[in-house]
Structure formats: structure tokens, C-alpha cells
Image 1: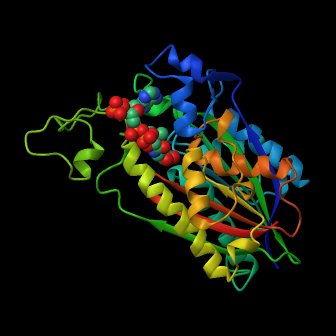
Image 2: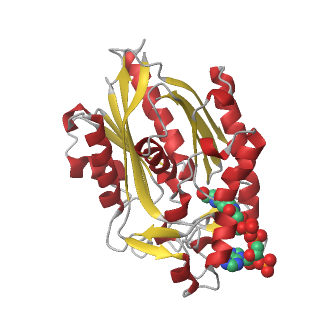
Image 3: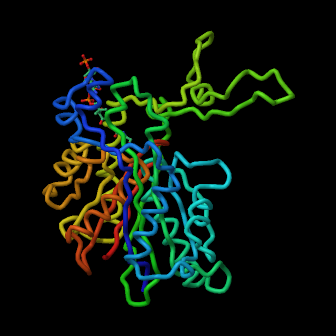
Length: 351
Ligand code: UT7
């Protein structure tokens, strides 16, 4: 007995932005972007909100699961771009969909969100169904939704980052099943981002704050102790990334995460039918495949038409893998992701 993924879905904004479209905005080319990343196009939300995308993906996953709205006991939204600070994104989606029996909260693990969210949801289900039954909230069915609109925290004048990201949402329904083998293993890990290779400031409006003057907005670089004496630092409410440093972290994080999940489950990587990695860069996936001695055919690659969709990436790719018939009942499936924080992790389950 254990947790089973019984529904999946994704949602994308209407607007398609191709590499050639971006070449009109910044100094780049289709050739450079395709060669370095495997990305051809991405979807950008013009009028769709985070709640619109998350709700559409959640509804698709719910429909696939065959469950009714009142069956959902838990809703977790993984995002770094919620529509509001309060209510949380999960509360907004719960309200929109009318999930009257669900408890709801957000989780921020950046691009590793799908892995962290699925692990938290399945752990809560297992805890409430196992020895903890009667002592915990009874949770049988959970909806996990990864959603991001990185377009709103992207510097559209920075060619090094703006060509990489896209908006979207992915969702899954995780359910307790007395006959399912369940989640075989998981692995979550954080490595301190001491050099802030991936960062974005928060904007707080202090215009009515009466107890000042303050030192101005809190800047992540200062908090992380990276500002030299006398150095001027400005608020940077856009994703700042040291691409090569993140690339290096990503390749080792992916392989370590995949190995750890297999080791913990006592499963050989050769017995994993489908690997669904975070879709940050096709080159990172190819590098990981080579390092793990696994043929690319067993990796789900969905990045081409959507780019890096952050917290929704793994669940969107998982929905693609299910919908294309790559995942069959009984298959072992491995999810692996990495992202800002620095966070990384993996989850191995039986479909
Ligand atoms: O989910 C979040 C995690 N993020 C990631 O996983 C991203 C990880 N990093 C990467 O995927 C890669 O580092 C990038 C795709 C971001 C960049 O690829 P790269 O092969 O590491 O390129 P680079 O940063 O070493 O830049 C090479 C050159 C530079 O020019 P010079 O100095 O050699 O003249 C850049 O200025 O490419 C230039 N460049 C571009 N040229 C055309 C950087 N961005 C662009 C661009 N178009 N968009």
C-alpha cells in the first residue's frame, strides 16, 4: 500500500514567443538559443494570472483522476510567483475550484518545487494513513500544483536570462491506494548558495512605514553577506543568475539526486522506465544522461516549446510523459530536479 499518482495535467498561456521574437528585443539568435539550451519557444502570460494557470492545470489533473472536488483533502501550490502574499496561491486556487475540504498552503523550493511538493504531500498522506491515523488530519487525496510566471520577475533586457524562461502550470493528484507499491524513495537536499548564483529581491512598499527612516529595502545580497564595504547595491527584483555556476551545480545535483533515490529504494537505474528531469536546459539533461549511462530515450524532454517553467517544469513534463504513453502501469518513474536555494531532489515511484 502507498501513494499513487492518479491524475496529471498542465496549462499554458496563449501567447507563443519564439526565439526569433526575442531576437527583436535583445541581442540574441535562434541559433544560439537552440544550440545552448534546446529551447525553440516559450509561452508568456499576458493576461493569464498565476491562479488562472494553476487552476486550469489542477482541473485537468482532477478530471483525469476521476475524483470529485470534495475528495481533495490537501492542496499544495509550489511557486515563487504567487498572485498575492496573502491569501497564498494555494488558498486562491482552492477558492477558485471550490475544494471545500482541502487544507491549502504554498511551498517555495524554486525549480525543485515539484519534487519537494510531491514529497511533502505523499509524506502527509502516508503519515495520516499509517501509524498516525486518527492523530493527524486525515489526508487520502492531495492535489499538488507547480506554477510560475517567471515572465514577471525576468529582466527582459538581459539576454542571458530572458531567453530561458517561460510561464505555465503542472499538476498531479496523489492518492492513497491499499494495493499500490507507492513512493519507493525520495531524496531532498539543500546546498547553501553562498555566492548567490540564483537570486531575486522582494519588493516591499515602505511608503507608509512610520518608524523610519530605514536603511531602505532589504537586499538579498546584503542578507547573504556579499556586499563589500562601501559597495553600492540596488534593488534587483528580477532573477539574477550566474549561468555557468548554476550549470555546474545542476549537472552534479541531477546525477546525485537520481543516484540517491535509486540507492535508497535498492533499485538499479537500468530498471527505471522513465526519468522526468527539471527542464532547465536540454544540454544539462544530455550531460546527466551520459554521466548516468542512461540512453536519452528514457528521459522525458519537454523543454523545446515551453522553456524553463520553474516550479511547474517537472509536473508539466510528467503530464507529457503520461499523455504520450511513455509511462505504463507498473513502470518505475524517477523525477529529478534542482533550483534556486540551492535546492535539489528526486522521487522514485511506481506508476
Ligand atoms: O532552473 C534554474 C536553473 N537555471 C539553469 O539551469 C541555467 C544553467 N545555465 C545554463 O543553462 C547556461 O549556463 C546558459 C544557457 C544560461 C548559458 O550558456 P553557456 O554556454 O554557459 O554560455 P555563457 O554564459 O558561457 O556565455 C557564452 C557567450 C557569452 O559571450 P562571450 O563572453 O563568449 O562573448 C555571452 O555573453 O554567449 C553570450 N550570450 C548570449 N549570446 C547570444 C549569453 N546569452 C546569450 C544569448 N544570445 N541569449
